[in-house]
Image 1: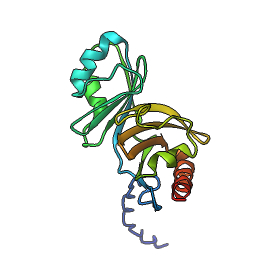
Image 2 (image 1 turned 45 degrees about the horizontal axis):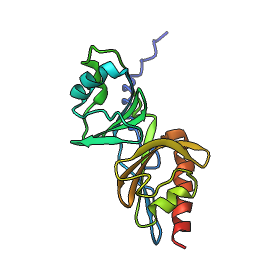
Image 3 (image 1 turned 30 degrees about the vertical axis):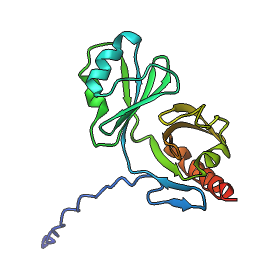
Length: 194
């Protein structure tokens, strides 16, 4: 009995995996406001006692704000005050704030949340009205000036809100709520145009 010749099978090509940002490329333009998805960024959720703030600020290259509703930005990195011992740090310059925190011996907890969040820019003369279509935060310049930041809600979703200019905001939300938040803001932008 002749043995059957074994067929040689070419090795399977390695699968190529590319992470696509949630809602990449989506935008809405209305008469007074524009809503668009921002590029990916590095983010951390940071918790630390007051005694650790100086060491963490030095490592991060940005002084962690210690007053409610404030933020500080430097060289593409922004730290937002969310609570007495809590900050949200965003790095848009391609650096890793988690690695920076790992060099600090002082007591703290830093968790990478880059994969969890997306950012949405809301800009234009109707930006505040767009956000206020579903957010109870007072967005007047007196109450929420440029650089102000807070954790709040938009409709039924929790967001982190940062005012980046007189007529511009950065809305951070979890990926799982991103379609809802984007759609809500898009509708708000259309309403602000009226």
